[in-house]
Image (cartoon, rainbow, N blue to C red):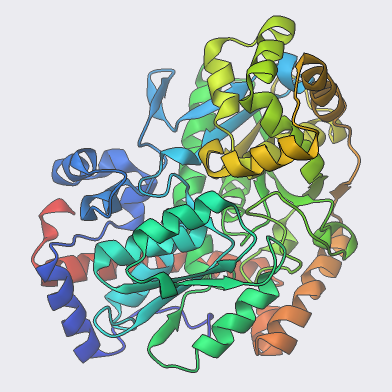
Length: 498
C-alpha cells in the first residue's frame, strides 16, 4: 500500500457496497472534514447528535465531536477552542503563549482521535477498507492507537493497537477496557523512541492480508486533517485574540514532532498569518537537532526518525526540551506543594492552576519550547505563540508517581521553587535551531534511511516531498474526501445530519 496513492474514487464496488450496508445497520453518519474544521456550520441535526453523545463511550454520535470546540470558550464574542493563556509571571517572557487543550476530544481525551478518523475515513468511502473483513492496525506510541481502537469500536470493525510496552500504565488500562480481545494489544519493545520496533511488528502483521496497517507516520490524511481542522481552530483563536488588540502578530506555532501530523496545522497558520513553524523534540533524542538518538519520557514525541508526513522544508525552528524539565514541571503543576508555591509566590489564580494541572507531558514540553522560541526571537508583548496540549495530565499519574519516587518521595515548596526557577525562568534558548536552507535539507535527508532503505518508498516519491508544490497539491484531496463522504452518507440513507 503506497501512502502516496491517496484514495480519490471508489476502488472496489463490492467492498464499497458491503461497507455501506454495514454502516447503515449501525446507524453511522460520517462527518466531513470541512464540518470538523468549522463545527458551527454543521446542520442542527449533527450538532444535536454530538451534544447528546456519551463522550466516554464508543457512541457513534461522537464522530461529530472530533474537533476543538467541544468545550468552547468565548473570546471577543466569538466561540474559540478551550485554551489557557500563560501570564508572564509564569513564563518569564513578555510574549503571549496560548495553549489549545486537546483533552476535550471525546472518548480518549486527546486530539489523536481526529487523526485516527482522518486515516480511516478515506479508506472507508472508497471501498479500500472493508469493516466486515479487515482488522484496522494502529501503530502508535499511545494516543493514536487509542483513537484508532475507539473509531474501530464505533464502526464495528476489529481494531488492533500496536505500541511500546514501556508507555504509561494509563494507556494500557484504557486499552484493556476498550479492545474486544486482549490479544488486540500488541506490546513492542522499548518506550517512546522505539518506533522502528513498531514498524517491524507491523511488517510481520501485514503478511496477513486481513491486517490493514494505518500508519500515522506515513498517512498523509493525518497531515491533512490537522492542516484543515487544527489549523482552522488555531486561526479562529488567534483572530479572536487579535480582535481586541489589532497590533497582535502570530509569531509562531509550536508542536511536538511525534507523527508530525499536528505540525500540519503550522502550514495553514504560516500561509494565512505568516507564523513560524516550531518543532519541539526531546534533547534526550535530538534527531532533528543533531542527528541524535536516545530514550526519553516526553510521551507522544521524538521517535528517532523523520516521519514521512513531516513537511520538513517548511519548518522554521527546532526547539529541544529535556524530559527532566517536563517531569519536574508535572510535579510542580500537579502536587499540593507545587500549587501552593504557584499561588503564594507567583500569583496564579484557581483557573490558571487548574489549566496548568491539566497539561500532559508533551503539552508541558510544548510550553517550554514556546518559551525558548520567545527568548530566541526576542518576542514582545504584541507577539502570540500558539501551541497544543495534545492530551491531559490524567494519562500520567503513574509517571508522576515514578518521578516523585526517583526524587526520594518528597516534593515540597523548596522543590517547587527549584523546578520553577530552573525550568521556567531558567528556560534559555539552548538547543534551539533556526533552520536555514542547509539545515532543512539535512533534516529532510535523514528520512531517507527510514522510508527508502527500511520501508520501501521509492526515491522518486521520497524526493517529491522536498518541494512545497507537493504539499500544496495535497490540499485538494480534502474536497475530494468530503465529496466521497457525502456520497457514502447518501447511499447509507443517513444524510440528514450532513
